[in-house]
Image (tube, rainbow, N blue to C red; front, side, top):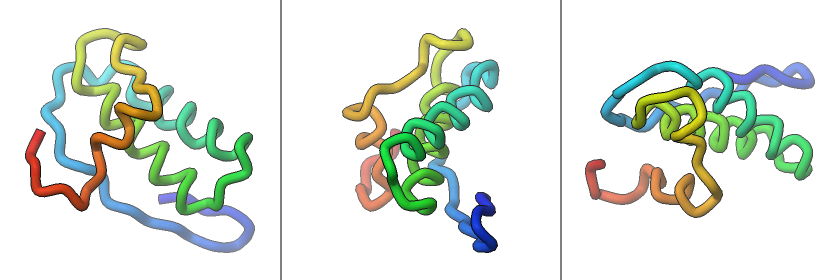
Length: 83
């Protein structure tokens, strides 16, 4: 959920296997801010934030799961592959 400029945006998170929740919030904020700095629309900021947070919990540690853009694209919810 993101609220900005009087609007509310909501997206579901992808299902992932959680190994360690440490770093999930930091990754979520980093994804959102990266898109904000890049000028992306709020819904895109939220989508990237959610994907980054999801990736972060799939590995042990607080920074080891920080994805790059290519890894984020692998969490595209339109695919039928279950990771």
